[in-house]
Length: 242
View 1: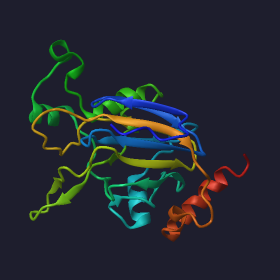
View 2: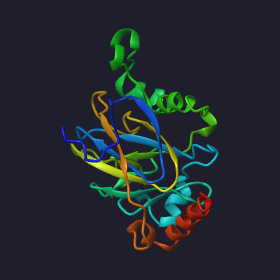
View 3: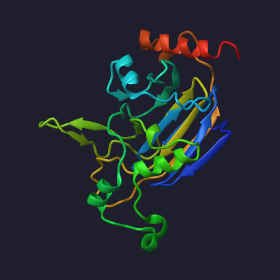
View 4: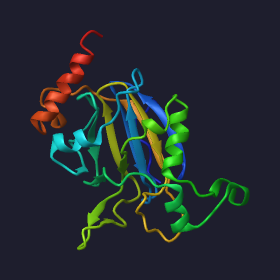
């Protein structure tokens, strides 16, 4: 198991098949680590001061002319602002379109497993984990939007169907998100919905919050494309009065 980074102000382990959330303040970063090389980090982002503003998959992808996420990309809100910048990662590909698992998909792939028999190892799915965590913030089904899946990769097969790329991640793989605005991060560690793993065994994550330097004029995320600079300026306007 890899060691945590230095200058960490908060650290926690999220076991596989669990849910969590935190407010990442502007000026801090969140480092998510795949501890064993088999995790999927399903993530949703909201403005904690106005939860109607949240991560927008369509704007994030079309604004940066991409279908995947990698170092240098930014995560847009539906208000045209940047919520977080992906300032570091080591896989080069993170899924944006696969969504989250549901009860029927988990049942078909791994069978029925209830708490009464399996205790904490019972089967969970991404949708319920998101909803449990969203409920803690007064949010619910109508607030579910297409989520991010860090550490997972999808490919298109010859028939045009999406295929989960196995063994894409590795132990100690990481992503680091710098908050450009205060951001409510909702995270769940269930299997990716297309993961063909023969056994139900979602991997654990480590979450670390640490101070982050503000983006300068030559910041790689801001300079990636003109749309990123415009979104960054929209965020600056939002905070221009303190």
